[in-house]
Image (tube, rainbow, N blue to C red; front, side, top):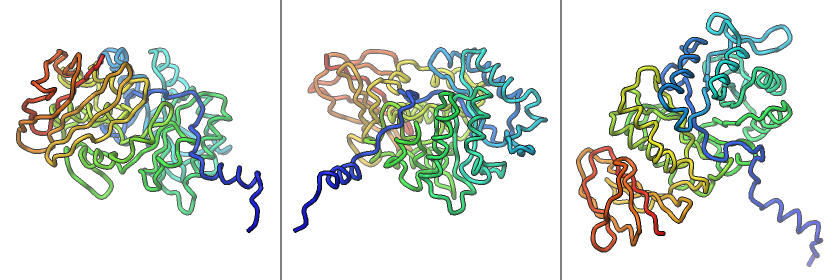
Amino acid sequence: MKKTSLLQVACLLLAFAPARALENGLAQTPPMGWNSWNKFGCNVSEKLIKEMADALVTSGMKDAGYQYVVIDDCWQVSRDGEGNIVPDPQRFPSGMKALADYIHSKGLKFGIYSDAGTGTCQDRPGSRGYEFQDARQYAAWGVDYLKYDWCNHSTQEVKSSYSTMRDALKASGRPIVFSLCEWGEEAPWKWAAEIGNLWRTTGDITDCWSCTGQYTRGVMEILDAEVELWEYAGPGHWNDPDMLEVGNPGLSVEESRAHFSLWCMLAAPLMAGNDLRNMSAEIREILTNKEVIAVNQDPLGHQAAKYRDYGDWQVWSKELSGHSTAYAVLNRSDKPKEVSEYIGPAKKVRDLWKHADIALAEGGYFRGSVAPHSLVLLKVSGE
């Protein structure tokens, strides 16, 4: 029998060791902000982005923790003779540096979008072959966040493609949150922690409670895709079930409240995607509920797991700091549900939407009616 050297043993241990997390010191809690895509698609402009930055402040969202204002696809039109990426001069006449300066003047951070392929999903110039040049340009503009898509990638290998941009961002000398967006096709939760701060786990979200399109999924379909992923999330590296559809027309207020609650339970990035300039008081109250946001931003960084599954209704649980646990009692069905769920002995139980402490039923049970497409969100403290 051939002896194995100590060097060979060490190599084997390294080969099977879990990937280290990206150590850029960023996104220690899930990033919070606003992104243009879900509401505006390609219809982006300097004026729109400035107005959204203003609204992020005046609505109270900045005070609630939202930081990033991110322009998604369609801001770029070409490359110049030296290969530099060129913003649309009609839509962004002042240029990206001036726009970043405006956003920074509001105490916010500036985000931008590109693609690992030769073209973006809307066939604007991608970053393939220009990664280091683009990263230097982003740093010069004052970019704080990069969403990096996966269209037009041809025969590229996904991990190496994203690693190249990671290295480029590091070499730029500016701290930039790196958001991978390859739609979960190559199980990024298994390898992306050493490359980026967050990674998409599914195809694009759309504003419906439950539906499936060619490239899109509703809130419930995306929730179902997160069930087995809780172990991969943590400070600096997050599963990303896509941006929020809260306040967009396909969801009712009750559905928006449940959607927001579930994303907070999942330790998901909270990137609003509605028109912040004219949202209703009800939607603003959802997006700025600090007690619910605290569940998302809890420093332990744990992602919720499905605790009970009764078909039409489920219970999700999330361990919090301070010897506390959050429970989401979710009614997925079209009819009200009378639920009874054992929570256990607790010194304090708080309903995070009613902003009120409640009493459990005898024996440590939560009992109550949950509206259709809705949930009850509880914080239970044992000490």
